[in-house]
Amino acid sequence: MPAGLTVLPGGALDFLSLGALVHRLDPGIIPFRKASSCEIHVSGGEFNCAANLSDGFGMETGVATAMSDYPIGDLIAARVRAMGVKAFYKKFKHNGVNGPNMAAVYSDRGHGVRAPVVFYNRANEAAAQLKPGDFDWKAIFKDGVRWFHSGGIFAALSETTGEVIIEGMQAARAAGAVVSFDLNYREKLWNIWGGAARAADVISRIVKNVDVLVGNEEDLQKGLGIAGPEVGGDSKLDPRVFVGMIDAVVERYPQIKVLATTLREVHTTNRHSWSAVAWFNGHVHTAPTCDLDVYDRVGGGDGFASGLFYGLLTGESPEQSLRLGWAHGAMLTTYPGDTTMATAEQVRAFAKGGSARIQR
Image (cartoon, rainbow, N blue to C red; front, top):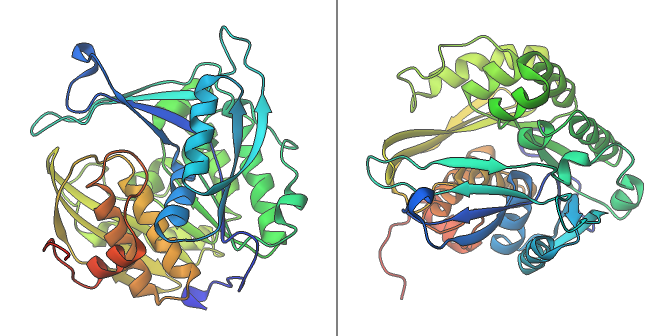
């Protein structure tokens, strides 16, 4: 199997994610302090991967998450259905006043020399109240799940969400699924209740169950406490910085078979250089570097992860799996919103050297 992974040949679901659903308010290039209208995107790092694999790549996917029964919850649930993702909800009753709520993310797109600005309202968030025992993992996995995924943002929401991840991962491993985790270290979230020391403890216990790990050098340093170069150095597109940390990661977590990240140099808000690098069971591959004209950068990392997972789920070589992730992440930055509008054919064409020539 690719990269030393044992991927089940079939199952009711190709991919199942565990995480929080959110709605992102997007006023475009207008800062919120001057905005008069906005678009609403449904998102969540873990859900984005399930949605991309379903809508873009035609796979059978699901999401285990919290849902609150009020109009925002209804809006989010409708978008989940529209992306073809099967939902396993722990349902909460909204009291009509203060929750439990579906989290809101506020994110303008910035423009040129002006960077995007992102802030949150995660007060009384339903997903933060999830705890072990809320999902019947035995029932969820009984008909076969090939791949299970979660991420560091969900782990950071409360003292119980990391434990739910560990519970789900242990059930997934027992059922024969590949287990992946996107570190996505968010210092502000961890500082609300645990801080850096608690984050390192929780994330380390999670990663002991992981086959495929996604995260950049900052995630590895802050999330796992792996020593490395000074974060923020002049090495955004140099894979040697990331590769130099791999031995330490694998020594601590020897069960890991794949370790991958994107490489991005931001020139302006709308102009990025983009690449990716991955370690596959002892072998390092680097994607090409391309220049991106960015429409909306949110979700590009999840686009990379889902393209990579697609390649590994479909038996592609490690090198081709990396290129599919690189290509899909690049394409996702050309669409509004957090989830894909690309097709597998378009991703494959770009991965093998396609261009922006009109398709007739």
